[in-house]
Length: 472
Image 1 (spheres, rainbow, N blue to C red):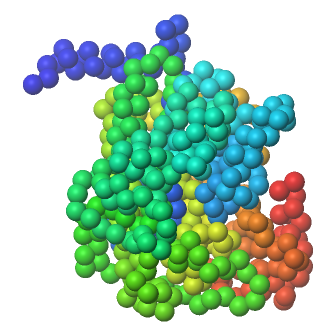
Image 2: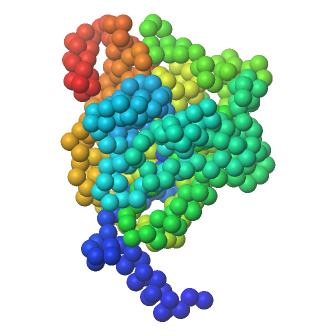
Image 3: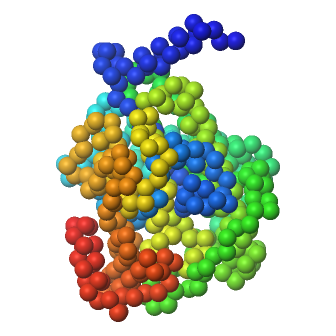
């Protein structure tokens, strides 16, 4: 039994832990949780059939941004924007390109977000998939210490590989150490009996807990980024998470037709190259439903890892002085527009969850419908912990929306290699490099099924000018 004296002593420890050795108040810590391929398939974002209790609890304690959009529908360029605060190239190797530029001309490259916080007195640690490569290294197996994805960024950049041998193996790993060699020989989804550690994210989370123990015993504030891989392909999770969806009815999709004309539709090559047992989800409704259930199981598996991390933060007492950000790196089409994957500029490819929580937040649990974008996260974190916002950061601090969830948002842009897009409260404009346009009225056509660009040339012209201005 814990005595009153022990409780008092613990309380004093938690209070004193927020102060530096000089007696000044310690700056708030930052915990950034990145989840790969996570669309807003969460109960707190309207998907009531999904079992995501830990992320939903974070939303109740924080602010959920219901209309957050990433700046690129692929892992590499989206994470580039998150970690640099600027719009970047659309390639998946965007951060490696930045590293090469830094090597050749150091003065031409601005500090990354973790480097900026390191310069401002933070210990910076990354675990799992935070940049494009889990562990933040290049080379054949993504473990070459001479090829760093983000130089000068992290005091530690860790990727536990366990039986998956190397970070490349862990990235697309299935149960019990199965590594992708040829995609066609690996099942597109899987469910296996066992603990969370039969898949890589269980080990990533265990390492994150170890790092929290170390960081919370340190006098310096910390910036800890944890990257959870699931629900990235292939969709593998312990069976207990798939069993959560036994008998659960998923809503029927309404916009499953391949769009006509020039669009950012693609043939779902990343998905289709896996072993699908000869089935195509665009033609087989039962198989499509199975794919969606396995995706949901992976979301629930990722949610459990989030819960373990947040529980550990509370056990250390550091939750009393920590800003928490949960971020999905882009959306993911589950059959909408006949796409099974990302890489497109439709709503589902760009819409992802964002939750920000901290102890002094007012109106906890109140969502905001304001449009925001990933590039806003860097200046927001600076603003919340009283670190100077760098002049080069392109985003807008969301502190005003954290103070008042009814405040207005702003325009959101995104891009891939072939087109750029602008999202407003009313419209989505997609401007193709070859000169054609798509325009969707979200008030009348939220599923983006009716391209009205030809009949609205003035709207297209106005929005295209705004798009170009924002991306300058």
